[in-house]
Length: 173
Image (tube, rainbow, N blue to C red; front, side):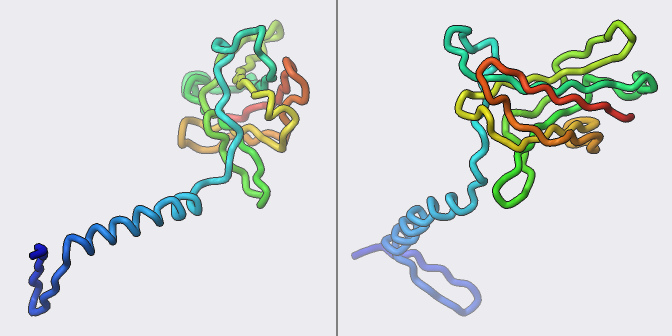
């Protein structure tokens, strides 16, 4: 005789057989891929490999580089360059800007030019299959999840291998 699970709540009694529970789980499992496919975000450019992992003999991509100039009046004592956060976004086919997963992070370095100007840089590697794609834009935030400070003009990824697309911006405190 098959076993039954009985639940009593208030005055209502119902019986659920283990076979019905298994059938329900099977239906939910079958529908899960449909829900996941519907909820999945649009495909983004692939995560780039760090340049130090790419062999020069097999390197066929390019680079994008943010060059962020800090004004002479930058409040270095209260706004540290290490705290700034950059993100690259791409424009999808519906006109929405979306963050490129993997192309987010703090500035790589800051250098002082001969005239005293300070410029911060962030560089990402671009896969060969993504060369020439666009439009993209850079955004700079005070910190991860912080206030937006600057949005660059739009740009396309480099069109040729070994090419660097540099985007120059001037930050405001």
